[in-house]
Length: 230
Ligand code: T5A
Image (cartoon, rainbow, N blue to C red):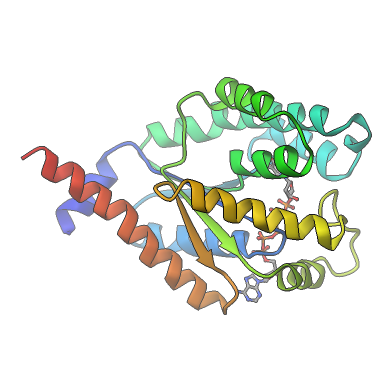
């Protein structure tokens, strides 16, 4: 195991994305996982979408303030793609090349779900934008955090306090139910990349489920790769 951990540190970093509906606990869990990896001497950075780089953070404001909503879902998709392009080029790829693990709060699955499934943007356009913005950069692992809609919205509302709901938090219950189902669909369709995590539990329990799944997926992949060399 020690040799494996050493090998994982020396190689290209791993790219891990976190997905799920509003208030599922992604930001909380990303922070905990980064702390645990860094404590294990695996260098890890955290980042988020939309945003994560200075240019993309400007686009984030346009999108989440609702300023771009009037332009329609297709135009919003293009803005998410523009932000992703900058983020991938200036932050994600360089970190992976330096051997760092990148933990990203939302990525392409969010576009597929929010703009594709919910916004009815043509899936061909969504795939074309993915080809341009990420090329071959597929996440090594995606955690889809699943909570009942009422639980996620309650957490998001409590955290927000007196601030105004953002562009998507302000949508109705039906929207959030469809969102949850769309994520469940992705988890079912891509079981090699995606792990569905029951996030309707206390923070430590969810963190432990994520750590176990990470160990199972990435270490077993490393063992398989190691054995194939012999
Ligand atoms: N979007 C994004 C698109 O439409 N297309 C795209 O391509 C992309 C990339 C981003 C929005 O943009 C959309 C999706 C989103 O609507 P955001 O502000 O980044 O918006 O917000 P979200 O990603 O939705 O994240 P949230 O901050 O709402 O939720 P998190 O990160 O899942 O949850 P977290 O960790 O902040 O927790 C929320 C609250 O719950 C508590 C926390 O302390 C916090 O107060 N909490 C728990 N409470 C009890 N038990 C637990 N286990 C808890 N875990 C956390």
